[in-house]
Image (cartoon, rainbow, N blue to C red):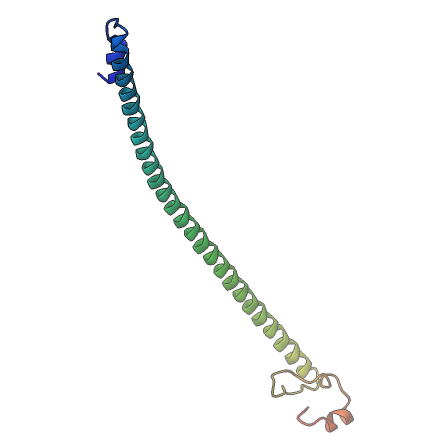
Length: 138
């Protein structure tokens, strides 16, 4: 039973007892205010702890999301490199086949230059021009 209950359940008092009642009532109000303040502090501490936990979950979730995004990006880059390599192999095979066909038909095949590219001059050239092209052969 609190001080407020004592005041509310007390029998009728005289004017002399009113000063006592006010002190009892004030003490009861102070006790209630302290109790409320204590509860507020407890709930504030619990809210801060919960906020810290939630922040931790959010940070871990963001880190996982970033890691997954990096993995997806790396996979996409690897797929693009593989596709580029496959296309290059296909192109090289087609080009080799075309050069072999031209050579079989009697066309001039020009050797690759130092940087790996063939000269634009070589190809279907008359014999006189081919003789002037160094490195070109029949």
